Image 1: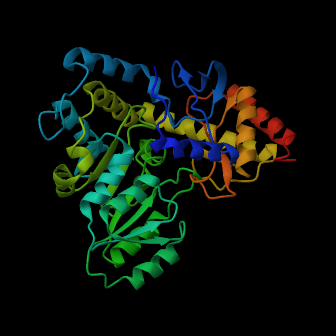
Image 2: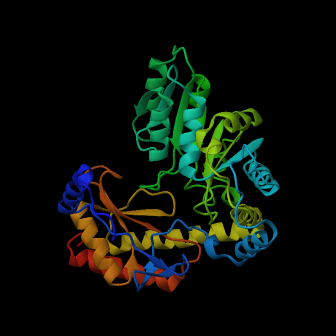
Image 3: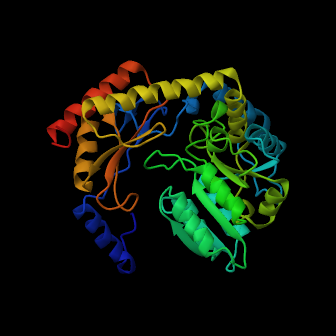
Length: 400
């Protein structure tokens, strides 16, 4: 018999009822089969506009072959944390490969992008230090800032002038200072003003850190990220990326100087206390970076952008207001959370999966659908998705 909720946890049921009343409660959609542009969720075949699988690598034959070969050679698990006996040669080879790809001295792989951000910030700063952070930075950055116990100052989103004001006000801060931003912001799809922020970091002696999760495999030459895209090589001290989105597998990484990486070996708690990646995952990531660095990788990135331009132009033609996105993330702004969830539910019933996002992920009154196209979407599927989006949104009086 399943355990019933004891009275000590009864308040959780009350909280769930409140979420339902506020139209913020959701059910997990269950995927049957592969993460593809047209996929089956909850038994329904839908056009999938919900995936971070930007380049379609999650089911790429070269990555599959690499994973299977690694299982045959190394088994299914590493068996320990990296600092005991869980560092395999394949882990070190992957980290050297990523460092070369990103044009940095060294790299360390974490179990997720979230732990890469949170673990790094918490490791390098302490209570006497200062963090200057964009107001829309990812939750993993926010958690890392809190864990570090450093003082935190927040600047207005992408506002270099406001950031400069804070830098000037804190120019005599006695401890270390970190200026941190997302490279691409995950809910709006806009790009950080990285050259201006790097200039401020240099002027005010701040460590410069960028979370490039949604830029990895998307921006820059062959998907090298915002640092490459905006010509900021040598100006960013810490680059965080993910292996879970465009790379198609799982994990996160930090790139920087050899000293930074060696310090994280000793002080980053997620690295110290988590079992290392299965060898099949490491091999999959190696195959992905080999592909990215090739002509085939460049072609995939260009196809991603071709589909993005088509889809975002189509949204405007359907009557949706411009979102301001500069990347394949295409927010469809609705406003009221209840209306956004109604829209996503009706779309799903008509064969399009574009999830609604409301508070606290985005501010009150700014609920939206977050649609993401990939390099592997067929034009006919994008056409059908756009037609369905427009038709359903007009039916619900979201657009006219």
